[in-house]
Image 1 (cartoon, rainbow, N blue to C red):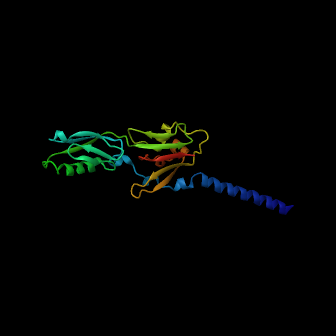
Image 2: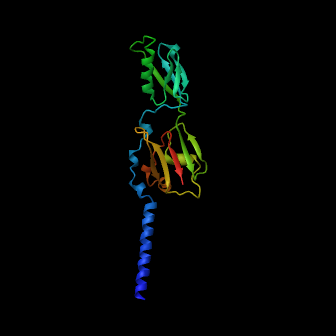
Image 3: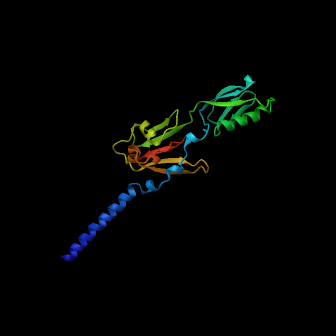
Length: 209
């Protein structure tokens, strides 16, 4: 009888230990260890132009060169005299320098001639929310949004959602490789982990299992 009791006690202890291990793994050991602070904050950097963005280019003292353009699917715009010019992937400052370089091939510019590139509409800022949310699809915004904002735009999670298993997939701007960022809805909604409420970058995809 004693041997049976020991075996039963050991079995229960093993089961409890196994459950604790699973719970710890499922409740976000990876989340707790993820360094969210290393993710970029788009508000702190000049935006990068993309397809669909509308820009206004002004060449002072040369009104015939000034124009408004929408970046086409091939990433280019068309300017008077210059013709087609690659704009997608450039910041407004970098595009301004590129335009000056091209214009000088045709027109002599004074040292004080200013060229400005103003963003009229930032249409290339879009992201995807999929899985167990009320509304799935591609979303856009006129301003940068956080993860919690993006989930709210999608109508919130369904009752079937696995709240601790949310993943944000992002492309590394330098290497081009995709990587995943673990997220926990309760930590986001409660405000317990403000560091987790990172800003959504253009092209991000959020998956709610």
